[in-house]
Length: 309
Image (cartoon, rainbow, N blue to C red):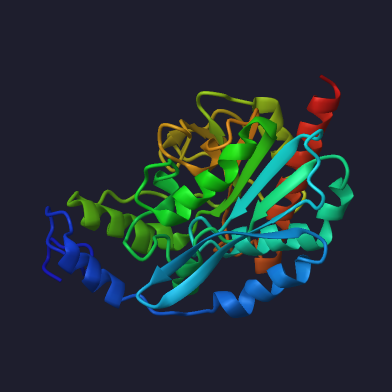
């Protein structure tokens, strides 16, 4: 790289074209298998939940079914909750946490709330341990019906007929050291912008909706997760990843305006989890457990509010 370059693809100050995207794609190697890690567990769960294929991807001959699991039977008289994982394919505990929730805890909510769970929104990214999809697009900025990422538009289409039923959507993510070493530099290079270094918070945090803040809900989730892993403190500016900390372990984003996954249902209760898997204080299993704890705490709070009016 030249001295002013900060990423090995593209020319500083110039947005990528097709040639740069192809060069970036050639750097991505399949490091794990969706059909080995995820599909068998979804198939095993299909005896207890309805297996829904809501689309398919074909990226240069690599084919992936887009799969969800939903309550069986689905009772229109009950409220509904959406759980999503793997929007960014490299965020392992999001995928594994969604699966472990289904395997270990979902039965506790049968007959109380309808569940729709998408364990791995971005299977191409999962296999390559990458944030983006095949087209160097971040699915989590493109959850809209006319968006460029098929991973995202397919979820929007799946959810659309059920939107009025959802009281909860929890989207399971991670913030990793590779955000700073790989993915933020890649975004800056792709968009022809300078890279501005930041800080990775040490611990778990949540992202609430600026347009629909639910502080009591967020703190109910934080309290449960804190039993499993540590919560990220604010930095010297009182921020986490550049956003003001509004309460213990919570920041806010305008979910719909940014095209984020957690904004697609219009549910009363929405949150994005952010696990920190690179901490020396957290094991991979703790990260999965933190995601499961977040889902169950979110469900318990939402159900308590629905039951209480």
